[in-house]
Amino acid sequence: MLNEEQVRELLGELQDPFLHKSLAETKGVTNVSIKAEKAHVSVRIAIAKTNTPEQMTLQMKIVEVLKENGAASVGIRFEELPAEVLQSFRGQATEAEAQDILSPLSSVQFISIASGKGGVGKSTVSVNMAVALARLGKKVGLIDADIYGFSVPDMMGVTEMPVVKDDRIYPVERLGVKVISMGFFVENNAPIVWRGPMLGKVLDQFFRDVEWGDLDYLLLDLPPGTGDVALDIHQMLPSSKEIVVTTPHPTAAFVAARAGAMALQTNHEILGVIENMAWYESKSGEKEFVFGQGGGPKLADELRTKLLGQIPLGQPDWTEEDFAPSVYAESHPTGKIYLQIAEEIISELNK
Image 1 (tube, rainbow, N blue to C red):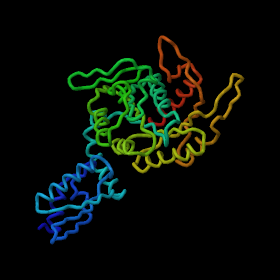
Image 2 (tube, rainbow, N blue to C red; image 1 turned 30 degrees about the horizontal axis):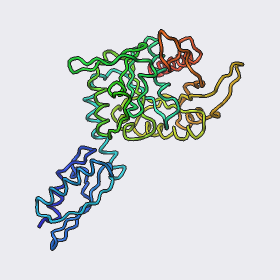
Image 3 (cartoon, one colour; image 1 turned 180 degrees about the vertical axis):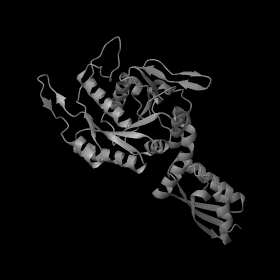
Image 4 (cartoon, rainbow, N blue to C red; image 1 turned 45 degrees about the horizontal axis):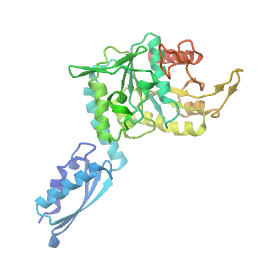
């Protein structure tokens, strides 16, 4: 009959399905109990994420390995690795991978656009910031990294598809910005039901397999909040600068502070805060503060950074010949605000 040391050795060779590290490396076999008279082995296993299909696959492997080596029956209890352990292994994995993945983009300045929650106009800010930087003569790329809620191609009026040639993906260029998005690879706007590891591979492709060419800035429209995908991107881009988007409402600013805190915890520099939907200007020129006041300045103060700008609530002027539903014209009052913010960002990054 197996003893505890043999059980730990056998299971230690299996991998955590999310960290791709052995259970021996993660110290994932946290408890072993053996009833020799019944040839029963009970184990407690700690992994990165529980209650998933990946856990079920690992469970089947554990049972198979132990029964092949003499156990008549197996009991398994799963638990999640402590946050600090999980964080350390994520960091180790992504740091090594990032050097390889990002080597072709070593001279590019990454700018991540983040928010604490959805619905604050983060993607609208992302596309308009990218276009504003391009209007100022910069070579700009934009990754729609909001994998579940991809919207950038539609917002920019993109009608073409990326070209794949010699195993390289060539991004679509629109309004002077090179664009890549999950939206290009999903048929008929289908929902994304993939789990973390698969999404991570897509993001790797966006960096590794896309022919970006010569860029000054690569902007990333991050998923809202502080979930797995956002965390992986933060750790993949050790030198990224960050802009946090909020609305004026105090609750939105409170939630956005979490996204800013994540940036600081992963050693990212926060360039500043953009307050979106700051007010609505009526035809008479009077400002109506639909979502309240003060959220942007309060968030900037809390994160010890600057308020880059306040964007009013409104809609771009649409033209049939150059239709881009969410992009403001250069001469539009809001378009001018984005140009001012872009100029300030360029100035800040050139210091």
